Length: 479
Image (tube, rainbow, N blue to C red; front, side, top):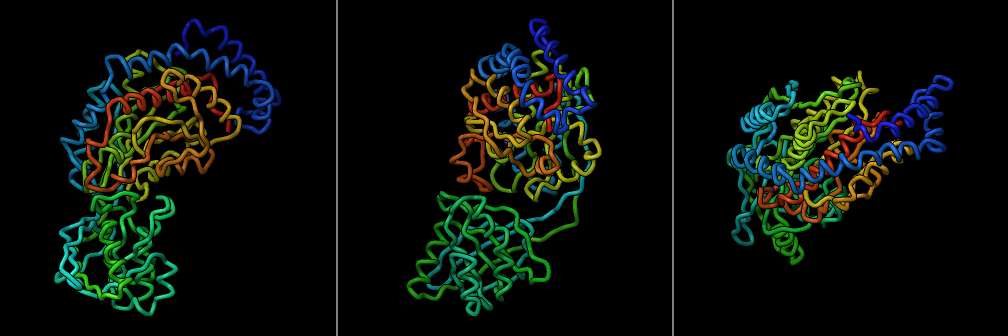
């Protein structure tokens, strides 16, 4: 709710903007309105946003220095230590949803569950060993949706390649072999194609299995898992990630002309889709409860590590943001809605079903927010939206000066909010100091040890300030 000291500025701003919108019956999201905003109204919005400096400082002080200091970290530790990892379709994920539902209810939030159907892939026992030219156990993690091997496993010679292009050139050598991809790590966005499509590319040339170098820039003999997609019409072959060290070892052996033989055993299987829920908590708006600022992270993880970084931290700061606002007795004009997605790791399954259910009200979604690249020290806010909305957000991030995070970058991103952004809803994501993120991503290393309580305090403060201010502005963000 607006503070008394801001009323003259806010009312004059609102009256001026309302006059602009009303001329010719224009809606705030129309092209004319955006032009009017760009030319005339920015200084009024700047004044309105600047009026939130005191409330932003109160949120930051509570999160970083006050009674809520380290609370998001403690919540994450309690949650991940109690539940552990939470892969789609598992009993652990079901327990996690119940845990969070009860915890957010006890926190005094309005909480409900929305049912969805999600994939249910089970890893089973798995192993790999090199038996020629010498015996060596290979650390592996089967990839999500992979089929298993026969019970006795697959024993075959190995073809090592460094790219899809090399595989095409050597297609005649791949028949009946296990293809090992030793692709260099360029970036996650580029290199992940090998994890996603390596099995199908190997199947095209007659391979019996594929082993993918883990998608990471750093390794201590740690395999990294993730989802993979089979191409329709091709033989489905078992596929797993191996460590950087073992991929490079077999590449060096192959360069010397040595024959390599590997035995791979995987009991992976896909079961019928499981019942699950997106978990939703709200602070309802006092003036426009039908309009929504949505904050989010995903509650599921892979079946290794604790899922603390990916994405327990994002889920916790999206809960913590509401707690901070509630603890200060604040209630914005619009509804603040935190959604903790299910089955993100399988391609945003829970989020897509949420979008399908709620897109009928898309005009009422003001801003969608997602934290899914870690909760390390915040660097900037990333934003996708119209030029006019970007100008508003440039003013909003100025309120983050007390935590030195006033930079607004382009390209808000997130698997779970992408359907909304693709249809024009403004979206934001959190840019953090994430240079170590893919060291631990989808591996046994994703544990509480990665997390830092002060970093989470800062992320929580940023998330809460941005969400509250946007939800309380006189007007929705222009599209």
